[in-house]
Image (cartoon, rainbow, N blue to C red; front, side, top):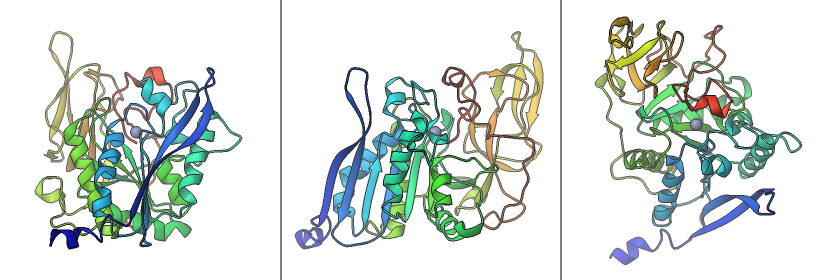
Length: 368
Ligand SMILES: [Zn+2]
């Protein structure tokens, strides 16, 4: 009985591991990106998984390894390809950026064959993905050390990308996480560049960076199985995974990203709520004390919101983000987003603010 049940799945799936050359080292070593593929004999949707574009965001590598350990038995049709380690140079030196050029790979897409080092690597990755006409591309990242996992979706690019954007939202809603729509347009990321190319793509923010954390691995893995099953690439799940969230934030409600308000005093941050908590407008979420422990400031929420994560830093400075929130929007987010964000150039994430690898270590937040 078990035999007849098992045979059709897996027996017709071809798993292959290969490399894509990116450059030659000064010692004449070949630097390459590992590529993983699971291809079913039955045609179907093509999905790409990508991880470690930021060298210190390591969970995604292991999540992809775990997907490939089990995919043969679960796959029904289509193909799953993966770049588990897009930035080996950053990974080996424990830095976000490409070590020698200090470029952020996730600000280098779609890349350029005659451009900078980062753009050349991005071009190779981007071309390999687009060539396969994928139904979905998932870019795996890590957020603040203390953060809940979430789906991050770009702002609606509008225009001819409408269909790809709709498909992105639908896939994101099946992850089992809360779904955050970026409040600002961040260009040159892998998902944003793919969306502009008409390819559905989103970011998974999977807890903290730096080391492999089993809870983050499990959550990421569950979210990916949810989405692969939703697309029909893998068998339907007997029970769908949902990350535990407060009542009002379940059912994949679309929320808007915010890291406001910032503090306006210098000192030591004492957090009053934790990631995953629900917070009400007017509720204090952090206080700042000075070196003697004297109260300097209490920072209060401007909206009802879900707490996504808090700063990695104990030090507060005026205008630095302290917490990130998912805020229920007044208008539905799936439609055209016309909100102006005049005063901010970048999302206030840990590593969003600067492309300088040295400065990034000490800045307080991360995002994609
Ligand atoms: Zn990242």
